[in-house]
Amino acid sequence: MRTYYILRLYGCFFYELLIQIALWFLISFITIYIFDINSTDQRYLFQFILWLTSGAYFIISWYYGGQTLAMKAWKIKLELSQKNKLFFCILRYFLVCIGLIFFFIFYMNILFGAKQYFHDLIIGSKIRDVQIS
Image (cartoon, rainbow, N blue to C red; front, side):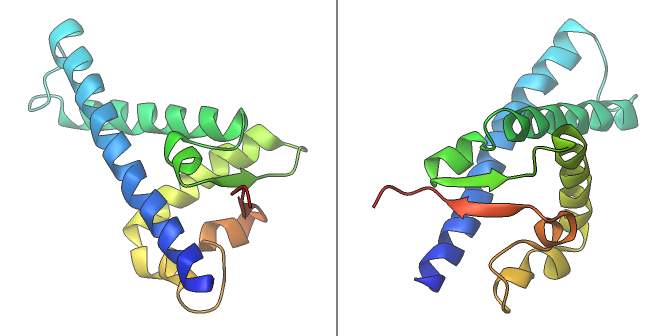
């Protein structure tokens, strides 16, 4: 059962990556062709816009319902305390971004004992299985 849960978490992680790539294509089209923000001349602004829209996607998804599209597909849900929920969603997004830089510390934690990502352990959130038995 534990191996199945770990595979579902990493499957969700990969599916989330595919959704982000699609979102980045859409946002890139909007910023380059509609707002005329060149990705080569204004590289850091372009990267900031992509990072900000990804953050908006995750924070809104976690705040309203506790699930992103990938989490719905893999039937897992994020549980946050109702107190300061928006703050914890924003904090979780920042920790996830830091976790992508330090991948082995944040995401390999699941393989070595814990059933949660390291950033969930830091802020006290839980990822719950919502599969219908």
